[in-house]
Image 1 (cartoon, rainbow, N blue to C red):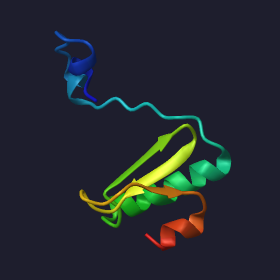
Image 2 (cartoon, rainbow, N blue to C red; image 1 turned 90 degrees about the horizontal axis):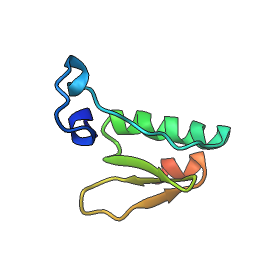
Image 3 (cartoon, rainbow, N blue to C red; image 1 turned 45 degrees about the horizontal axis):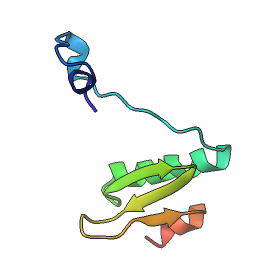
Image 4 (spheres, one colour; image 1 turned 90 degrees about the vertical axis):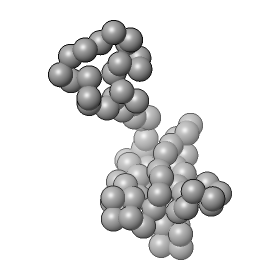
Length: 77
């Protein structure tokens, strides 16, 4: 989300920067999310998000969300 979307009328140089909100994850959850994020940057995953401490990924726009519970789950997506 961009700053002007949250605060209309904001016209600072930083307004081009995105704002991210991160959920608090366990250390193992962070490890999974970091690995999934590497895969997203490499083009292997389309999207990555968390909800209520659970990690989800999508591999294509038409695909269904896949819940990732273990590092090995990422190998099968």
